[in-house]
Length: 449
Image 1 (spheres, rainbow, N blue to C red):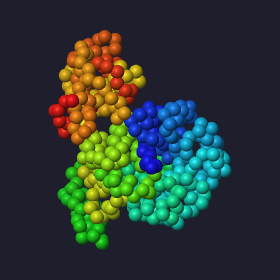
Image 2 (image 1 turned 90 degrees about the horizontal axis):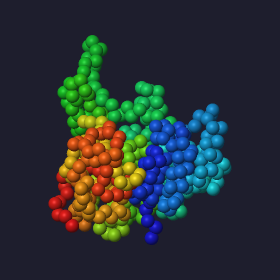
Image 3 (image 1 turned 135 degrees about the horizontal axis):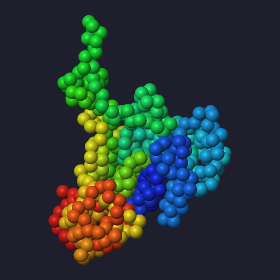
Image 4 (image 1 turned 90 degrees about the vertical axis):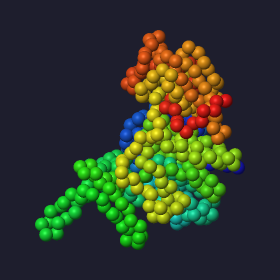
């Protein structure tokens, strides 16, 4: 049986390695503004991207190079050079959005498979067939496509691979077709430089018809959809406003069974090249666990949800793949642009595995959970530096670290350590590189094994 691929974002070389180590089968990233993520693109150059491809291939995993920007005429020569340079370092596919760039990539680098970006907005058999006939191997479906439509496309084009987004930020506009950032800030969303204006605070004003003045709205506002009797209540704080355009984040962890039972989805994609290292690791780890549980016929949706709740998020929505958003009216978060996750990341283990760097205040005898790759078995330890214990819940092992003393690598002992301290802190034993330490989850049991 061909297993579904878990595809994670790689904003830089470290995140690439973390995503692969924590469970992703493949990662996607890019170099330069052609990758549709200006900020993320600057974190890779050709050499580091090449190193990332080499690292992935050493683990029998894959890297897809994003070249999904929309070029102007004066950039075509530069784009040609970029495609040739990217082809030389051997990615496993190009992610392309524009039909002309698809044809150009096939001409310049016919050996590199083409994955069609979600920016191409494929929703139906007609468009899918056009790109398939152009030589596209995989289509990253528009976020607005339903699972029923994916099934119909696969019936008609059984050899075409389908990839869907399963987690991450959502745009309030149709597949990112937004001009607000461009109008307000001169930053064009579909060229990789969106300012995320939809996350800003906005204040409402009502017009006084007699004077023509705009009067600030200071209480509660009700919005009613023309074809839907349901009312949406939006509360605005005086002087602050409300997040009228703010979309919740996509989270389909509860629908793994429906998606994989369909048999038509080849890859599950996680959004977030500009997000944290913890996000890269935790999402790859959680969806790896969910997929493995599916094949083992042992799904634990509350476990996945609890893990994903540890991430910063805007609240979660099912998006479009399973049901239409108007059925539940839960796709918008009008209260906050983003909320902290339920738990605090306190440290990240360095490359040596013998020490970690502090990310948040840590004191001796605090119980911190170790978030490591699922494949890594950690043995209990108890020595002068600290102890590691194991707890088990729902047939899932959790590992905890308690430092008896905070000892730096140079031997100095601290009473407490705060974020910003760049000195490595000694661990009681070696842990996997880039494992994370977070505050004890409140839902863990006290049963040690």
